[in-house]
Length: 158
Image (cartoon, rainbow, N blue to C red):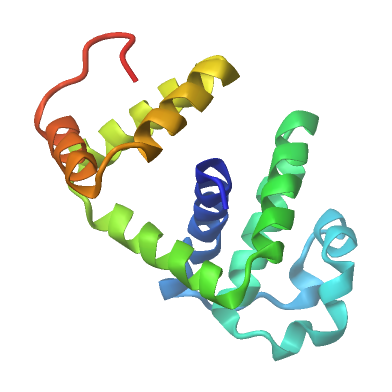
């Protein structure tokens, strides 16, 4: 699984976990017509879902319905990627997400900024960086990660 796929799956997992703690459940009849249409495959077993899952699905459907065409296509692709993951891979994604959420806000933001810069690089540059990273020893990787967390990045640097 590529880093981009792992991050996409992480984003999907983040949506799945959002707000689960205070869930009260959603009756099928309380969904909007658009939500019902989108969630039609869930209708027959909606009442079997726990309250938190019902709320997560309803909120996700509403967010999806409010997206523009491009965002919908991207969300659909991420969801399909998530569905293709094995239970072990999903568990690993959830664990990485929890680790990410435990990071101090500054470190989380730095990781997000680095990822955004990486995503805007030309594909050739991203490939070059991945190849260089793969050639590092575990110790070199550890030192690189530690250095990235202890110093601010120069503008324009990945």
